[in-house]
Image (cartoon, rainbow, N blue to C red; front, side, top):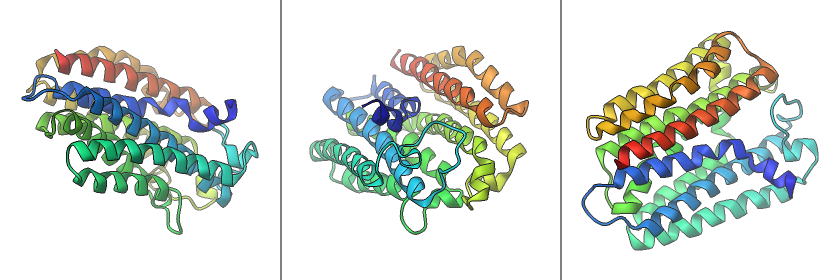
Length: 286
């Protein structure tokens, strides 16, 4: 069981929880009653998609051999802890849970959500799967920003009150910025090995120095967008209380941390995202 928990990459799960919390909080105070059961279903969808993406990446990178030499956390297929077929089944099962819960939401709101859900699952699989994975072409951050930022946040607001608000889109962009920051740290750490196997992530394309500044810009954007969100809900500036948590990881990145030294930065970025998300949710709800 421990190997499957490891393969699910628990440190990435804040990226699934935060958009739902923020999207639900953005729905508070809007016209109409909040359907809380749909918010819970949206959380299950988000978590299942995140876990599904993690297993799918483990499977696809493992069978391609791009994870044979890694600095980061253990991968199931590359390390031989699980067979490729079992990891693939785990990915499909996770996507299946997301599909079932998403269907329940769609049936009680709009069937157009089925298209959005299908696109999210397809994007999750083809990130590193299929003959031309877009994650190998430097488009991974775009997927994360759209689906774990805009779609997950505004989609939760829609599931709650059957309406997408300007505030939910602005905060979705902020959520997406922090989710991208997590991916950027992963890809920054893996630049040497990714370059060797021809995996052209955005970090490989930008190069080491520009990727480090990109990380800082993403972190800063999340806070700046909170200032924009304050136009609608002034208490959302509570998010700035999380700013001190950004100092140490940003400093480590700008000072040139590489390889194993970037692993703690990933954890600290996850903690920043979680604290920021909690404060934003409280601010929006107030």
